[in-house]
Every structure is written in structure tokens, then in C-alpha cells.
Image: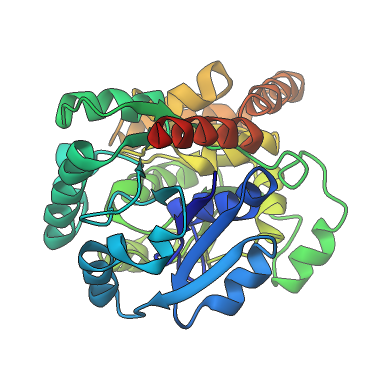
Length: 370
């Protein structure tokens, strides 16, 4: 069986769903013949990322044209005709496809909380998910949490395969050998105690709540800093006034998009990794922090509880005062108890591997291929 994977939506600095697609592109060729379809200007990058895959170009660079191409032309193109199963890894799929199609559903926030997205984007992806639920041969959900929401928001008779993300346990590890060099290269101080946030800067990530919580925490703790790692997303401008007026803005460091080399060092050396997201399909930063043995605080009653279980601390969604209290408790935790927690987090992270995720994807392709 040969599978085709659409990688045309992955930006130059992939995060979240983009990271997931990169992992698939790198790993699938070790299991079955794989064809990657990229943007016309992005072929060389994918040759370097997945040298064992067949790379095809031809997808328009412009986002709107790319989506139109996928919907109207891709289904009968040479790329799709040349494979046994086509995988669309980001909600959308070709119309009138000539091959069985698998579609990945990452989250259902376009239905449950459309206010977290640009209105046009929310409308578009609601329509795309409904179409995939009706016309795909199999849907791939990134968590049990998302699969349950899918059944509630978009009832479908299409088979659903749950394939949780994984983590590279060698790359994301509790100990690193080049951390000092990485910190110096990034202009960072190893001796500064910090709370770390990792994620795209957009409303649903809860960064506004974390900023309010940090203001409360800083009144009692005059050393801790808040480091924010992540690229700008939709609605990021709403954080600018919060940062400008923040009472301890001199103790908030914006790192922007950080490299794959620096990220594990930041995670394992953080006093706390805070991820107060309002809603996710999976929550990859939480898993990567756990693999690094970090002390994690995230949102209660979200998919992150499915991932972290009892190894993380939880705060009620949107409650800055409660988050500040939980942060203070984490920072004051005795060393021995903290060590127990981080060992437990690492052990739980070991349950989430990319090998296991790929195995579930192979099962989805088998189902699609009939």
C-alpha cells in the first residue's frame, strides 16, 4: 500500500498540527511507500525533512488558492491517483477524490468555541469537518477527548481511529548536555528562575490568565520571571496592552519561536511549565514538558488531563487567582516531592510514542483501503 500525505499547509516554523505532520512525514516512509505533496516553493525543505519519501510539488503558495486547489483539483490529480490512500492531515480533504481518504481532526473548537478563532476561519473549518465526516473513508482523532466531542458535534458513521501524538523521548529528556551553550547562544541566563509558557500566542491559549496570575504571584515572589515562547497567532495584538501595563513587565521575557534544540532545555530547566489553555485537541507542549521531567500546571477538565493524569497540577479555566495560588504551591514544593512528581511525569510520557501513533495511522489507512 502506498499513502499520500498533504504537507502543503505546514509553515516554515511548524507548531502544533504542523509538528504532527512533520513527524508523520519523517516516520511513515519507514513503514510503507510514502508520497508527500508540498507547495511549489517548498519542495527542497521536504526533501531534507523526509529524504526517503517521494516529493511532489504543484500546490499554490497562496493560502486561498491552496485551499481551492485541494477542494476542486487535487482529488483527480496525478498526486492522488498515484497512491492507494490519501491522507489529509488538517481537517480539509479533496472533493471528488479518486482514492480512499483519511482525514485528521485535531479539535472541535470551531464548533464549541468559535470565538477563539477568526470568524471566517471558524465557518470554513466547520464546513470542512462536516464534509469530511460525511465523505472521508476514515477519520483520525488525536485524542479520546476529541473523538468524544466529534461524536457530539458532528455525528457520523465514518470509522474513527484514535491516534494520540507521541514524543521523542531522546530529544525531550530530563538531562541535556549542551544546555549552557544553548542558553548563551540565545542570550539567556541559566541562573534566572522562570515560569515557562510554550504555545502560539492566540486567545484560546490562556496567556491573558497567566499574565494576571503572574502579577499576583510577583507580589510575593521578587525573583521569578515569566518566559513566553511561541510565535504570534490570531488575536496576539490583544496581549500587547496587557504586557505594556503589566506591573512587573520587566520580569516578562518574550522569546518568540524557539528552535527544536533550545526547546527541551527551556522545558527541563523551568521552575514550572504553565499551559493554561482554554481548549486543545491534544496539548503537545504538556507532553513534551512531562518528557523533560518538568513540573506542569495546566487546565482542569480539558484534554490535558487525559495526557498528564495525576502527574500535573490543575487550575480552573479562566481563574487567575487560583492559577497564581497553584503556581506558588508548585514553586514552594519540597525537592523530594518535586523529584517524585517529575519522575512520574517522565514515566507517563513514555506511554505516548510516535511509534504507537504511527501504528494507529497504519490501521486507519488499512480501514480506508478496505
